Length: 517
Ligand code: SAH
Image (cartoon, rainbow, N blue to C red; front, side, top):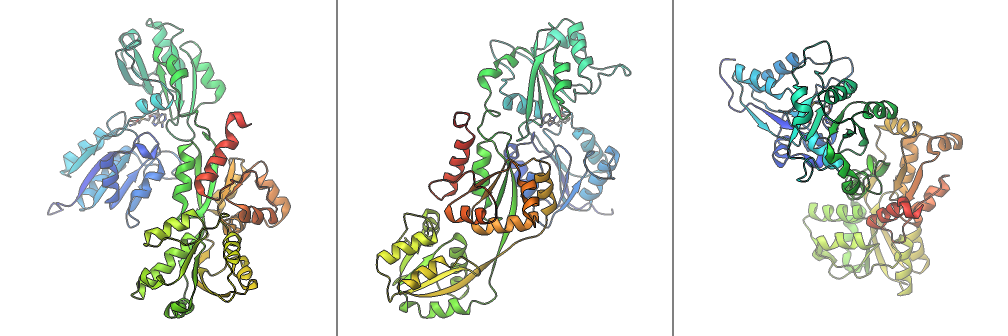
């Protein structure tokens, strides 16, 4: 390298303990601008959603990485190469990079080679594990000191550099990283050096994630508890009186949907509200975008209707996508919402009406029942005979609404503005999750999510379908979606009274509340 490229820099970023919400704002900012991202096993893959599509992602984890396991030297070398080549490189490390993360070794190599760097701290797994297991790591009444130690060195073979004699009674709370394999040695060293055998101990696995698991015991029993419950790394061991506070402070594992894996079948564009509400309540969401939305090839029907908009009495919107794509087309043809000034506007439900408001339009009609049929009924009651109705909607959709209006004497123009495409990909993962019995619940928010989900799991006969979905609960947003599920051989367990996402989540939470079962 003849000339140092001033653009290149390596950012060593703490990814936090697992919960993607525990990334720092600085970390997020850097991920959003990264050109290359190195990440490892303990990093939550959801953080990679912040990274631009154009960035190169390099997995350097030691587990689950297939054949290729990188050595620390190999990683150091790659960081230097990419940094020196002028790229903005983010090296994402679980927890905090400088707490048992070998971050310092990576930095030393960058320093040696003259590559610019910056370090962003992260929430280390010790504090997160304690907090998410309901254990205040310090408490005035119990302990005034905490020690973070590595359990990796506790084996008898090597001379341990951990001062067990001083630690055992010197630190109030002791948190051991990488301590599962050597747990029997660690607990006996602590007892040997004077810590009481009845000292409470908690072990927390995959802290702050939906699969968090915690068990408790005492210094003398915890090894057996861990063995019996099959707890494996990554896990932290928390030793000290503060563990006893867990009963009153536990909150994370007590959330109503904690530990339940749920499939969210929505369009990529719309999944977020449902996913975040379910996750707020502790669910572990697997998102499958069963539908991909795209514009139609031919807008001539809509363009023609818009040119003659003064001859229409009503324009009806039956989905968020219909609104999005209707207005996109108006924009593309140099027009705006003012063209609708002379028409009555109908919205199928509250969410659609709210979406219209974003375009400066207040719906004149929202039916009591948030369905196409509900909308048709309200219009028919108001006498629709002889009226002209424009219905911008999906290329393929249920015919109930236009048929009911036409039966009542209306003149309906259906103008396709978008289409649903069942995407491929990740099918195998979904089928495996179902076959392994990992899925608690599947959510459906429209009829097409049902049919696309079924085509994704490829259950071409009833027997296969029942095998895969045996014991899996089904939640449907409303009666039409539920009916589609039933006609396809599914049993609907949860259905809200109001057909909205928040109501659906409330019904799911109610269903799983201990009092309700
Ligand atoms: N730099 C990291 C620690 C890396 S050492 C940090 O600051 O957290 C790896 C060890 O960290 C694991 O063996 C385990 O003991 C602990 N660890 C990391 N993430 C964890 C998690 N989500 N739950 C429990 N333990 C975790």
